[in-house]
Amino acid sequence: MVALTITEKILASHAVEGEIRPGEIATIRPDVVLLNDVSGPLSFTQFDLIGTGRPFDPDRIVLVDDHFAPAKDVESAESLRSTRRFAEAHGIRHHYGPGRGGIEHTLLAEIGMVGHGDIVFGADSHTCTAGAFNALGIGFGSTDLAGALAAGKLWMRVPESIRVQLTGAPGRHVTGKDVILEVIRRIGSDGGLDASLEFGGPGVAALGMDERMAVANMAVEAGADACVFEGDQLSFDDMAARGMVPRAAITADAGAQYRETITIDLGALSPLVARPPSPANGTPVGELRGIRVDQVYIGNCSNGTLTDLRQAAEVLRGRKVAPNVRLVVVPATQRIWRAALAEGLLDILAEAGAAVSTPTCGACFGGHMGILASGEVAVATTNRNFRGRMGHPESSVFLANAWVAAAAAVAGEIVPPGDILGNA
Image 1 (cartoon, rainbow, N blue to C red):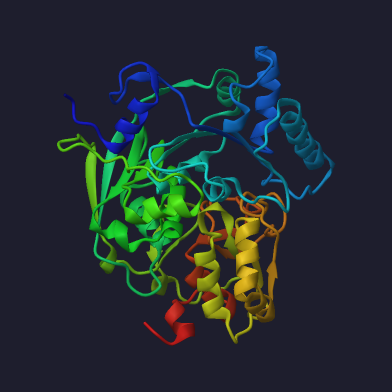
Image 2: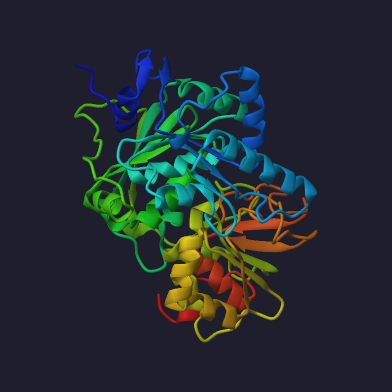
């Protein structure tokens, strides 16, 4: 019997046809098909052309208005209406608009739609976030997803697997964001091409579910097709907390073959900042001390969790945002927004001078609600810092964790969080 990696075992359990071996083509049935207000309308048009009339299973389709929601202009409003109409026409109950949902990848887990051993197909590259939950999230194009809507299956190339062995425990101000920035720094933005990153080892236990989401979310920035964490008691209990029936985690077989193995000692990491124009440019925060900042953005599908908001609030409690800095804070979902409100976090952030937004992807991809002007510099907890990503092509985005971002908002420049908090 061939020994399988976690990725291969999950794919094998969902395979309709084809051999589950790296490089082979297999047809896979997903548990969930995920679409947003940008990718959705394109898929809906192609779905109508296919002519099946009805989606494969309305209860396994999730539609989320998050990129241009709330609508910023007439074109955006038309896209949102297209999504609403598709949901209404086909009885899709999992449709989440402004005020009812949030950013799709965070929301999907929150509503109990992804857990141990599941597969999510999404028309968004950051569908890999599902890997945090011992599941696979795989991004496809909108035309591909039209096929999935119609047939409930798609063919795909079986990826190789790269093992990322985590040891130790992170020190002060080191988060999941730093773990994935370290991975991308080591292997580059194309080091995970045609592969799935599998995170395991004793260090996994030191990362909460929010931190694992931050890691999994940026697997695609290393070029990976997918990502998956080993499951454990924490992820098992998390399924129950989200209203799912917990089930055993999927584990790799002894002797499973990996393209390579990377070992990361969490205790040896320091907070990293990815210099523009690539997430692969991870640099210790102390080496960038003094770079002036115009805007700080805390939010997005990688780092808009309650954990991130708590970290930011700890830095900002009793302090003010620097006079020449704009601080934009975007909780990833409505539930996170309300939890932060109940804890008093939003009041701390607002008192410091932050603009707190409804959940949206807007500024992250340069759409709305936080666009940068020519020459402006931002520190953001988002996942991409390509040229022009958040606005003008002559603006610059530095990627960092919430501790570092909040410290920059207070100092008006990039500084280690300990400079503000007075601890190492």
